[in-house]
Structure formats: structure tokens, C-alpha cells
Image (cartoon, rainbow, N blue to C red; front, side, top):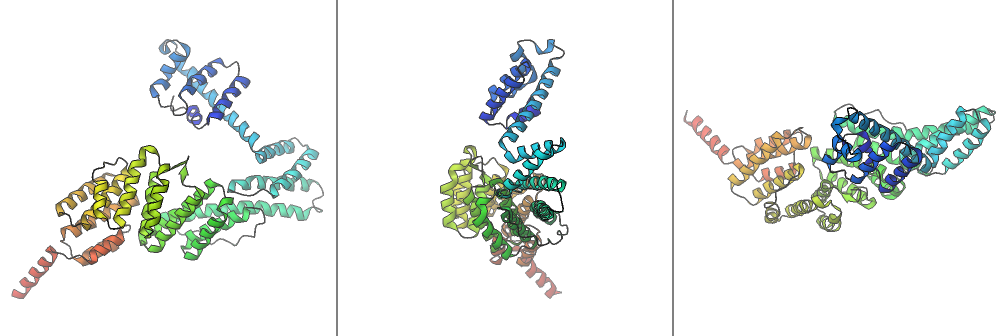
Length: 486
């Protein structure tokens, strides 16, 4: 039963919603005794539904109806049909609840009904009132454009019925509002396509035209924000980043938190992509500033918790900008909102990152060597920190090479081969050259420059500048001696 659509949707309900749906079933489907009994059995396992053996069709049937599942040839069909009915009723319940709570949506549906039924007088009054209400409603998400679009559409429709020449100016105003609402969605999609086309090496989208100055509350904020984001992803210029950062800092409270998270994520992913290729200080500084904006509005916490990967990324980026005090305070102030099962490992990794970037390499070994990480990304991060710390401490080459071999095998087995995996693999292969000391400095620098994406590129370059080959130099000297004796 765990694969049923009904159970998947049921898991998404809050406790009050679950109780309301129970009452809804009793009120509107009181004679559906089988459905009620199945529902009342299932909600015993809310919210996690983590007892798969008790959610099997056979087990549930026997517990609910006290009869043998195998003795009734129609038992499976009855259970599946009941689940299908419950899913349909749950959809009806959620739609009804949404329309009751969402005044603009309810108005939109009612105006559609009035228009379809030809109730012209009532339609005209409601359309005019709905239009006036939406004109002063602030925008927090592009989805808020939908009721504005519909209100303008209905208002234009009723004015077109009643002396359209007299109302020409207002009809034109409604049309402009509809166009402005669409402009927000168009800008958002342009940002998405800009990022997609960069990842797939396609030509960038055509230049955006300058949009009108929107007067609707909040509409201009979204328009300006998405336009700044698009121009940043299109050009990568600092001026557009500063403009976007300023808008987010000053107006972020007027944007829906989920929408704000998406905007920051677009900008962050674009900047992170640039940092993997260029690894310039300005890219890390931008990422650090975006993290601060996101923390200011709490957009990174999911259900009150901060993902351990995001936690580690923020510490890493702060350290790369040399903002070590901020990184230390962040670990102390935000570790309590990490999920409990990932908290200890995430804190250890963050502390190790901070220790490495501040030159405390032995502390890195002390923190990470005793720990066996489970998450694939955590393993990669921990091993790369250990590798670099071993090298900094001039550890026995065999220890470093053994660690390189372990990480290389892990990366080669990884699937799919993402850009991050390729960047880490290239790092390991170049580090092996540094440890073996068989390649010339020129060859290693060439390998670094040729790598399309490379983890810790600046660190590798720094170590290569101080590098002296042993075996390569001996071979060159031997070759010269051989040529001289001929």
C-alpha cells in the first residue's frame, strides 16, 4: 500500500488537516463504511507510515475486516478501489479547503461561473469589485500575478459588454496589467533558461526588452529582482550582482520565502558554477554574501532544519573569503538547527574545514581520522581534507598515495559522473603527481590548466609553484649526459 497515490498524499497533510478530512469523510460519505474503516486503520501510522509490514494489502485487510485475504477473490480489487475513492475524496477536500482559504481563487471560480451562466449584472458588480481589491494587493510570488491577471481579464470582459468605447482607457489599463503580470513569469523563465543554456553550452537567450515601470505593489519588486537576476546570469558582471544583492537585502521581506529561496539558489548556483571554473576571489565573495542574505531571511532551513550539505558549504565559502570569525560564529550559532542524525558529522566536517583553512592541519587529522562518514559527499569532503593535510604536514608518501588510491577508486565507481566528481578526480590525479615527484613542474601546471573543472585548483597551483621534481630532473640530466657523449 505504500506505493498508493492516496498514501503518498496523505503523508503531506498536517495533523489539523488530517482531522478535518476525517470529519469531511464522516459528513459527506457516511455510508462508505469500508472506506472509513480503511482510512481509520491507515491513520494509526501517521505521520511517518514507517511500518511497511503492517501496510501490506494482505495484512491490512485481515486486520480491518477480520477475514482471510486469500479466501476473498475480490479482496485486492476492493482495497485498491477503496484507496482510489479515498484519493479522489482527498483531492476534493483539499480543493474545497483551498478555495475556502484563498479569497482570490474563490472569486475567480465564482466569476467564471457567473460568466458562463450569463449573469451579467452580478458578474459586472463582482468583476469591478474584484479588480479594485487586487489593485492594492502586494506581490510576494509570481503566482500572485494569477489573480491580478484574472481580475483584469474579468473587468475588461464586463466593460467590453457595456459601452466599450466609453471605457476604452480602463480596458487598456486592464490589458497592460495582464501584460505586466505575464512579464514577471517571462523574466523568471528567462532566468531559468539562461542557467540551463549555460550548463548545456547552448547560445544565451536573446536580450530582454526593457519592461515598463510597474505600479502594482510588489510587482515592480519582483520584476526588478528577476531582471537583475537574469542580467547577472547573462553577463556575470559585478554591477548586476550588486544590484541583485541590494534588491534582496532591501526588499526581500516583500517576497514569498519560497520564491526568495529560488531566486537566491539561481544566483548561488550560477556563481558556484563560475567559481568551479575560475576559482576567483570575487566568486567566493559573492557566494558568501548570498549566504548571508539567505540566512537573514531564513530561506535555507527546510521545516525548521538546515541541510548538512548547506551548512558545510557556508563554512567552506566563508573560509575561502578569509572570513574565519564569521565561520566560527556560524558553526556555534546554527549547529542546533541541523537534523539530529547528521548533526555530529556536519559539525566535525565544518570544524575540520575551518581548521584546515587556518593552517591547523594536525587538528584536521585529529577531527577526521577517527570518524567513518556514511554520506557520499561527506566522505569525499573528509578524504580531500585529509589528503591536503597529509601533504601540508609532509606525511610519508605511502600514506598519501594510499589515501589517493582509496579516493580515486571511490570516484571512479561513482555514478553518474557529475561535474563535482570529475573535478575531485582530476584533483586526486594531479596530487598523485606532486607526491610521486616524477613529473616536471611544467607538466603539472599544464595538467592543472587543461582540467575543465578542478577541485582546489588554487591550492594545487600554490603547491606546484613550490614543487621540485626528483625523478624527472634525474632523467633529464641522464638524457643530456647521453647526448653529450655521442
